[in-house]
Amino acid sequence: VAGFYKLQRLGVEITQADKMLENAIRAADGYQERKYQMYLHRKEQLEPDAVFYFTEEDVHYLYARSFTPYDSVWLSKPYVQNLMTLMTEDLEKEKFTRQAEVALVLYRTGDKYGKLEAQHIMERIRQQAVLDRDKGMYWSKEYSGYYYRWYEAPIERQALLIEAFTEIAPREDELTMM
Image (tube, rainbow, N blue to C red):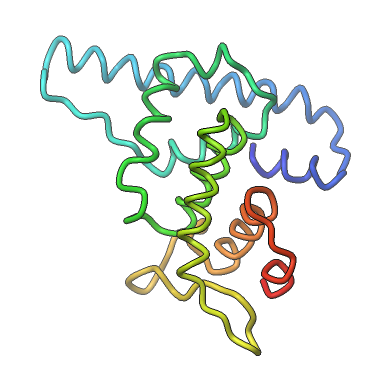
């Protein structure tokens, strides 16, 4: 879903994209709401100490949804409020990609405080950048082991950080270095 929105922002015309995106968003909203309802049922009926685990899937959902026009009805739904609250917990311990996605969500869906928080997140990310005369501005390896998920790939991380800095905290000299 996010990929289609990115293409649209670049001016790429996709036949019937609006209808596909509308259906995809409706399906994603329904999935997230059912997931939250199942959590509430489990908490009320089975496990009073149950915890809602916030996953990468939830971050990607909010990130994709942030491309849609501002929707106060959607933002006021309990499952969305839960996700929006959970996404910022312990954020400084998360990978740069998650931090950038959260910053974009806050910036696109938030009020002035959300936009301010997004700028603070981007400043923390900026402070961890590596500046190299030959390589420019980048963020060093942050995955462990021999593999990483597609959204942790260095090129994906760099593209997402360029998107976030361009939208939230642009500095022409840094964008040129990226």
